Image (tube, rainbow, N blue to C red; front, side, top):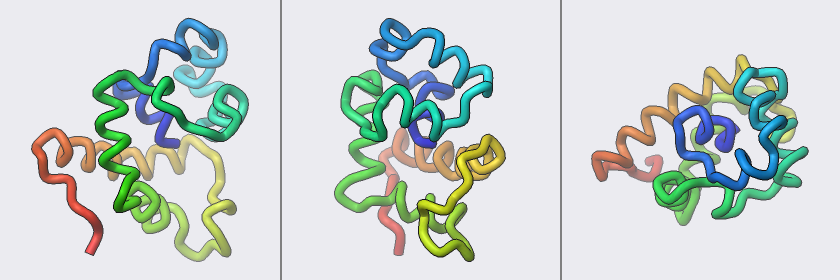
Length: 117
């Protein structure tokens, strides 16, 4: 879901618009779910090519070393599920998580991104 968020926030890498324009259009038009796009285009792996410079800087801070993204993901979408793999790949869940990622991005831009307590 993070990669879909990045594209919608203007932080996606040029690789996707050059190599996968049809798939990217389907993602942005919500004809392809975030997880389906990630598996189809990225084979389930994120790399620096998936983001522009600002996107890479934010992802680096949001994912490592504190794994804040996973903590947010679990808190918002994982409640009552056996594992995080059971989270439904849906635009409704994307919208729920987007609120927190937008918040974290704002914190990061202000230099105030902090690990969960």
